Every structure is written in structure tokens, then in C-alpha cells.
Image (tube, rainbow, N blue to C red; front, side, top):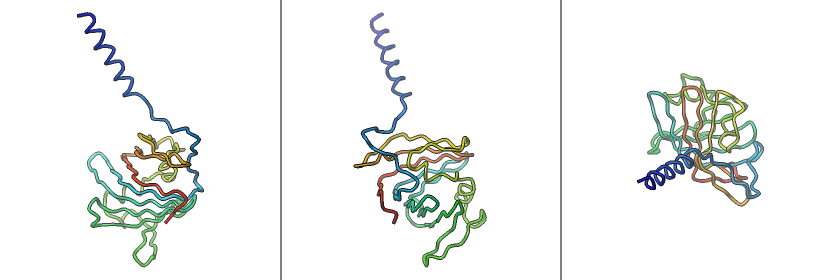
Length: 177
């Protein structure tokens, strides 16, 4: 009987240790993406608040340090929107390439509220970098690796009343469109 108790306590200790392990960036001479590196990420994003959840597909193109192009669509691809971030201002782009500055009343909920409270360095967080804003937390749950870069595969970001779970299934580094 004491042996069985010892085995169970050892097993519980080992399992609880595994649950608390943090996932570190792979270090096999892989470098992090810099703000100046152009890249494109494709995947899904779960946007959660206290009373609402929505899954979005995205294609995020980081063009330069101050410019991003984000294509968002619902999970079925029926509704979509193209957002352009230029120097921390967001614009909606139509099919002719014309841009309209976004205001909170331009978009439907919950996207309007999420966009109005989105952290300014969200593109840096997508690459696995830590937030410079103490009200924004980010955690890379799993990493993927390419020939030169370590990039997030699963990422959690919290800001304000929102939580984002970002699953990136394809990275194109050095490509912005």
C-alpha cells in the first residue's frame, strides 16, 4: 500500500510539473523576426470577450515597421474585410484599393470594439516578441521553425476585456503580399 501511494504521488508531481512548463523559443541558431522584416502569416483567430466569441480567418501581411495589411473573414468566408494599418491608424480598403479611415461606428460588433482597443504593437506580438505595454500580455504556446526563423504557431494575447487565440498555419518570411 505505501508503494502504491508513493507511485501515485510521484505521478501527480511529474504531471503537475509538465503542466507548468513554459514553452521557450527554439534556440538552434534561429533568429527572431524583426519589425523591419516583411512577412505574411495565414491562420485562424478566436476573439473572445465576456459575452461573445468569434472565429476569424486571417492573412496578415507585415509590409514594414509602420504598415500592415490584414484580410479578415468569417469562418465560412462569406463576409470579409481588408484592414490597412498605417502609422497606428486603421483604414478599410475596398475592392478598388480605396481606403477609408476607420471609426468605431464604421464596423460591425465585435470587430469595432476589438479594433478600437487593439494594442499598437500587435504585429510584434505576432512574431513572438513581448509586449511593451504592461496592460497587454502575450504567450507563445507552441513554436514552428523554418530554415532561419523561429515563429509562433499558437499564440495567446490578452488586452482589455479581450483574449485572442491565434493559430498560424503558414508563414512566408521575406514576402509581404
